[in-house]
Amino acid sequence: MSSSLMDSLRPENLLRSGYKDCVLCEVLRPGDEKRCRDCSGRLDQRDRLLWEIGRERIRKTAGILSLVYPGLGHLYSGRISSGVFWAALLPMTLVLVLNVGSGITFGHGFLLVEAVVIWWMAYVDARRGPREAAAPCETACPARIRVPDYIALVREGRPLEALALVHDKLPFAAFCGRACPHPCEQKCVRNEFGAPISIMAIKRYAADIGYAAGIPPSSGETGRVRGPRVAVVGAGASGLSAADTLARLGGLVTVFDPYGEPGGMMRYGAAEFRFPADALLADVTRILARGVRFRGGITFGKEITFSSLGAEGFDAVLIAVGAREPLRLPEAGGEDQGFHDALSFLVRVRERRFPRLHGRVVVIGGGNAGIDAARCALRMGASEVTIACLESRETMPAFAWEIEAADSEGAKFLPSTAVKRFLMKDGRVAAFEALKVERVDLDPEGRVVPRTVPGSEFEVPADTVVMAVGSRADLSFLPDGASWKPTDPGRNVFRLQFPGGEPKIPGYMSGDCVRGPGSVVEASTSGREAALNIFADLAVEETRKARYKDNYRRRPEPQVTDRPEWRVRRRAERLSPEAARGTFHEIESSFTDRCAHEEAERCARCNLTL
Image (tube, rainbow, N blue to C red; front, side, top):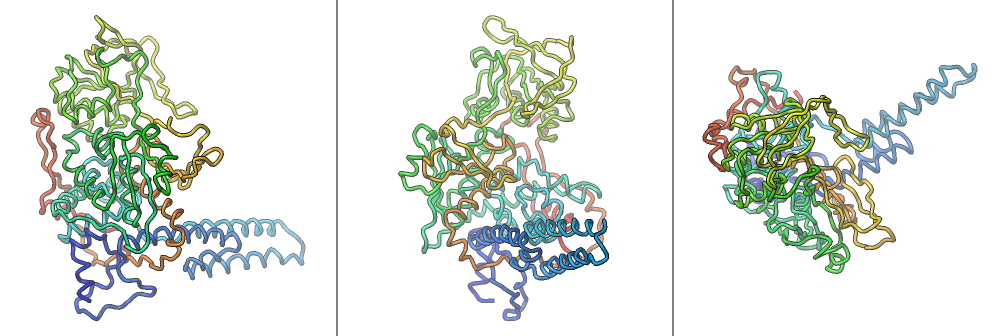
């Protein structure tokens, strides 16, 4: 290999410039490497994103061509064998249909229907594009991270490269290594043989090692063509992920947010003992280091508008404000009466401006925000903390491991409970009257409708009430009559449409503000897809000129026999519940090198074709 290629493959350069996909050219003797057909070498981060945009365009065009004639779209996209198959299948059926010399029969009608079905199936297959083997964990991940591949890199002692591979799809490795719902682990094939791989903990290990190395990233700025200038409204997971992707592509991005610091609910809505500020700083600092500008303390609709951003020279606006407006229960009073909403409560705790708690604290709501608020209240010295929710204990929406942690730290639970009315005494809340819930239904608009048991009233004493009953997006800043049409509805990306064509600046929406509250990895994926859509719309000529193709290939590995020790799941060290209740410091530590290596060895690499 050339010295420049060898330098680009150094772990620190992979983390700086982006993971290089193709591994076929890694040979023992320089000069013996064989180039693949259509080989473009090792793609940098910008080329890979341009190919991803181009691949989507090719996929859509292939679908249209296959409506003209089956197989045509496959040939256009380079799937020669599939194109020949679909192109030959239809004439065979039509010849049988047209052979009506002996008269029209029921069989001819059946064959005609079959021809239509073939036409439709060819269209669907062309739209789907080429597929490669993917492990169940990768398919379950909303961001479609190459989970088995970064686990393999950790196993080989290459955590910097593992982090670079994670960053290819997800910029929040530190957060999602600590507070992700990890659906990947629920689909891990190791569930059938002992316990799933600790995928989230391995990701955190790679993030902690990689960030500790202090290697700054490079932007996608080419120095030749000025990238589009995009304003991102909202510095949460969706907005920052979009900014990161646009910066990789060479765009000039400015992020606006009403809070003084970037991070959104990752910074202000997650408890410190679950996600420390230093970990968030590692994720966010890396995004800003790509050249992303941040302007805090600015509320969209007041200090800035669509028109003012257009006047500043921005080419597009992405609305990614999240769902930050807390919902409140009827008859709930203010803080002076002992009522708090969970989001404001957690923000104050995070900023060390602790609210004053009185005696018994009741948290209403069984989501993650409610669990965090309850655990914070325990650490703030509440005499008793109770979590009341509509759902049963088994169906609470919070993470199961967070529920267990709250239980072990001393929180009590009142599942299947609905608030009927609050009882006041001397101007403060003293209790609330509750009803038992038989089941929870949804109305046609998706709102929760509890079915209570008549005559099951009972009182719950409470000196302080924290409401964690949900949140919604505040979109009051949108112009009257504004609507949005789906661009990528599967990932919650929408294009804004303004009445009368004013303002003229293109507007987009992504993340929780259009789908409702969700996980960080879902919001991040939505923001990334929004960024790709924006760049494709604003830099049409550049995306069409992209001549590179992603030639990613997985390194083959020998098949090995399962070992008994691989059936045991490794766990990181944790503080005891008694010690955890007395501190806001992080209660779970990172994997050691040995632990991470042993846990990564358990991966079955089921994405490899044997």
